[in-house]
Image (tube, rainbow, N blue to C red; front, side, top):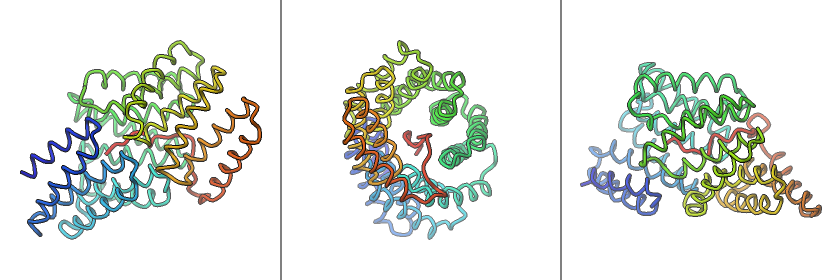
Length: 345
């Protein structure tokens, strides 16, 4: 019964029916919890899955509670050096990275990777997601060469262990493409992101929002290269998905809207850019509060307003952005590569 409920919840989640997914995972969790100690491992799994859904919905505080519950159950059932405990801790670290809590992410992800290193064979496909998360963390710390090595290592494992199922490692390609785009390796970024989109085209089970994020990333590459005719249809398609799912997947939607705003700024379409940035800001403020990603959007909006000769508004938004940045821990301030927009849970 509980296993069937979990399968149904996964179907709901892939269809972006997140409330139904969460409620169905909760029903499975309730069954396992009634089994007491015998159901601890399965209850931890359901708690981790619930955390993933909550994170997709931008409900970060609730997701944190679910992940911590999973970790506590697994530490009691299996100990801190168990792979399952490390997996739940990695999920928590990814949540922290997504929500801009970089110092907390550093602690959680480093611990999780340390355990995975000890208990997993170095070529295990289970290792891929740990390397991916570590790559994202290193990017956030501007350690780009190390991040690239992490993702290339994850890709080597994936292409050997999962060669017949690229959907199991598509997120690694996506993140590697983002890295190349952000450090100016546009030819490499184009190749990797186009490969990512081909995988999405072959597999209808993969998230449409993840596809939208990848399309916007490739559109961003073409924008940087001033290949606007190629960028335009990508943003048009990604924004169609966002308009249908914006409130369901707010964090990823905000990322797409921000890149679309950058595209319209490049085309001197200031008012359209302003609209994109305002929508992105609303979504990011609702999910993140005063975090670096919000400051980035505030600065982008200020630039659009300056182009529209609305200097006082622009000054106010930029001042807010500066305050947010100044309040961050200097050792863990956010940087320019937003690999967090695609959830690898």
